[in-house]
Image (cartoon, rainbow, N blue to C red):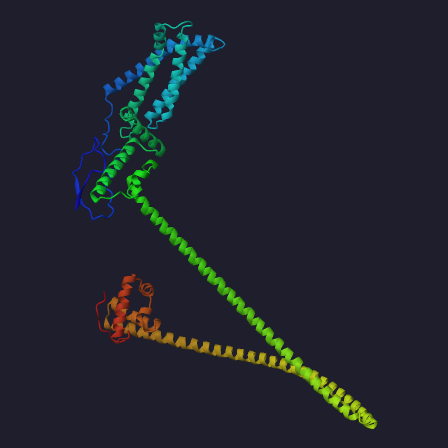
Length: 520
């Protein structure tokens, strides 16, 4: 089905209504918001720039300024003496001269603030709050004037008229000053966007106007911007209501965001964009959280791997210590077994000798002799073990010295072989350089004989460079090397290398008579 899009904003005096626009609606899906009309910008043509003042207008403006100054002086003259006397008698100033100084200072302050206000407006730097002290001081002078004319007894009707007459001239002066300030502001800033609400709107719609004024002050917006926002919101809500009625459904919370967020300073477009923006931010936060979790998991895995490595190293050290302890235990067990066997043999021998006294004596002598012999053998074995230990240390020292000598000899032999190989390499390199120079000279002579063009000579030389510097593979020869060698661009060097590669594949070697091919 199709729907007719209404204008998104209310008609304005300086805008032309556009015809309705027919847009297809794709089923029951969420509708897209209607287009909004951008607010008018300053200087867009809605307020034409005023022409400079003519001579007559300048004379009239000077006359108005002179009349306003005369009006100010008149008010000052009328109230000066009365207020000075009143200040002396009733406000407890020491003398009439002090009262005159007081009223003169107040009037001079009023005139100075008015002059500053008008000057700043003329310089396009208006300060709105300056007018409020002017109004306050003018009201104070009116109150003093009225108080000086107030009767001491009962008031009559004429007394009220007399008191009111003392405030007519100051009010007229303030009205003239405000008019002059407005005229100056319109002259120096004809394209300035309206920042104040018209008085007629306050009279016609006070409560909605108060809400607009509150938003203007809270959001630092101009009157035109607030009117545009209100029109956009009304147009959007009318459009949404029509769409929901056509689709027989209730508006969603996201569709009602412009109305919900309007008191908080959001435009229709900003409110409709907010869910998408928040979803993007939520996705970004989720991605960041997942990345942090992955980094934490990797860190945990690294810590576990390091712990396993440390545990494996500790187990290795424990196993080595266990093996060493086991070896020591086995050695001690073998020594104890030997001692036990020897003791058993000695005990059996002594038991046999106890059969007779002679046998016991003989056995004693034999045992003593055997003990002496065993002691002598033990001493001999200790000496032999010490000699063996010393001999082993000597052999180890000799082996180390021999190994050091052998290593030194091998290092000397390796250095000699390296020197011989280096000499052979230098000789071979010199021969290769001579052969390359000869080949290069022969190739140059052949090129001269063949009357090759500079491009053909360059291709032939690139073929020789491929053979000598790139191992016969053209792709291994850098284009920068070719460009530096022939002082050409990289693209020309690429053409040289491509031509050389083709000729090498065709079986040419860069030295024989070439088959002339065009070079790009």
